[in-house]
Amino acid sequence: MIEGISAITLGTHDMARAVHFYRSLGFELLYGGEAAAFTSFRAGTGYLNLTAQPDDKHWSWWGRVIFYVADVDGTYERARAADWQPSSTPRDAEWGERYFHLTDPDGHELSFARPLS
Image (cartoon, rainbow, N blue to C red; front, side, top):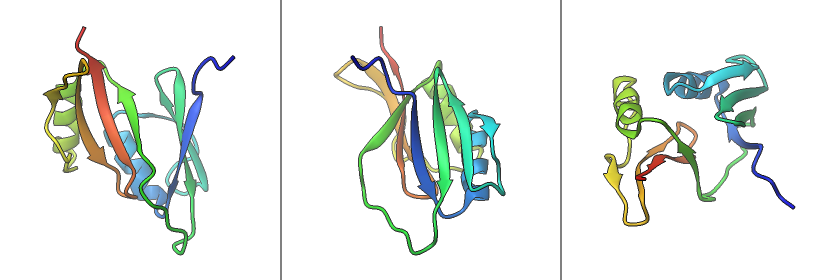
């Protein structure tokens, strides 16, 4: 029986830029860093990993990662303060979450959300 998702690993063409992006949003660096080929961040009880990819490696849209956060609006403001450009403002969805979307510098679509109740 599957118990949960432990980690997701995303490719990056620029590890330093990607590490800066995720740290600026509050992800805790556990392993690796700006000069590493592999980096791991804490994401609640799971992990977000980054793996360096060559410039000729391309990926297409694959979906999005949804991170639950304690404060959707606060996370949105933190992203804006770091000069990131969320693709939507926080809103309440009919399925019962408050969320906003943000694309990372490598084109991976992220959502930061919280159940409404």
